[in-house]
Amino acid sequence: MAIDREEGVRVVTVGELLDEDLTIPSYQRPYSWEPATALQLFDDIRSAYRPERALAETGQAHRPSYVLGAVILHWDNEDDQTHVVDGQQRLLTLTMLLDLLDESSQLHTEVQPIGDEDSAAPVVRVRTELARRVKHMKESTKAVAGFIRGNCQIIRVETDDPDEAFRVFDSQNYRGKPLLPHDLLKAYHLREMGGESDAMREALVEVWQNVPDAELDRLFSTYLWRIKRWTRGLSAPTFAARHIDAFKGLTPRSASTPAARYHLAAQTAVPLLAAWAEQTDEAARMADRTRFQIDAPVVAGRCFFEMVTFMLAELRRLRGEGFDEKYGDEGKEKSWGNFASTDDDFRELPSRARYRYVSELYLAALLYYTNRFGDAEIHEARNRLFTWAYSLRTRHQRVQLVTVNNYASSLDDNRSAFVLLRSAETATELRRLHVEVQGRDDAKHEQDLLRLLDRLAG
Image (cartoon, rainbow, N blue to C red; front, side):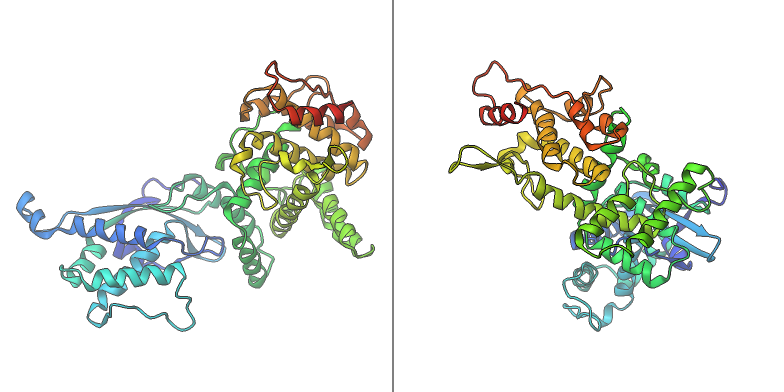
């Protein structure tokens, strides 16, 4: 259903909005504003309040309105609740601020944590700093509170279509951190967990929240998204909110075709079959590789979160395994890790920044290979994929993302490891991959790397 133009978008006061029965859904990130952000919001409101200046300049007997941006709401027909899709950080800050203004006569300079609150938690730090500012403000706290409730306005946008809510939500929270595409995926797949218990949903959210945004962004943007595109001979633009359909997966409602039903059944059956197999780490790893095929759609809901957990661990393992090969003469051996752009924890190494794109290309190819063929012929596969990816570095003075994009998505005969592997039926077919090691006229350009690639290709 589209947003109702008359009732779906309207201007309301802060007081009117906070009087509504709004809920913060479990998929929203915890409160994360820094004190400086909250204090800036308060200072802006105080500047807009300016009672004497308003009367002197406008001659009005009332203060002008002040707009605090938009809030996106989703009316959930199933549980009869209005969820805050975008704007929760702002609303929670305003709620804290109004509570402090209302209780200003009882405020102390220091605000003690309530109960078992963590004094380092963002919400406690913000409340403490706001309390200090309220304690020392010269304006009437009662009048400022009245101004916020009655004169500060918010554009209220409501829809009963959750997908539409996320399409229209403001991608940049008011002075906050923008939601990334993986945040939207989390929200979508949590909504698809209707049959799961609240405890399960909360546990999955907690696991997700413990993973840094940079890791989740890297998994989807640098690896899974690019692999999905490159295997089809398509360029991989920057992963954005408009691309999340690629990871929404299957639901019992949407699995209407034979192919969709096959994938739905297969991903349900694999864990059952794995329970009868030998219980080892390697057996579990192979079972998860079988279950979470990058080429196949994932089952929406809980399965998606389990896939993300596995892929994060798989990527970390492959970072270690993929660069631990040695080269050089005995007693002077070096590691392939000398050509990795990150350390084992994916921290970027400035001294190796020139290897960033080829490192990512190699690791993406290795992730895709092992996802399809496991550890079959793995030593030979590493040699060939490393040579294929890093030959770009010896061939070009500069390697940029567009260079890698064109290389990885090439439909020319056997020039893309991704295109070749997608159609390969056995691991040995990787030998058909076209690998050409070339150096530049500049004799000093990547000499050590060139010697290694010549040896691997020879």
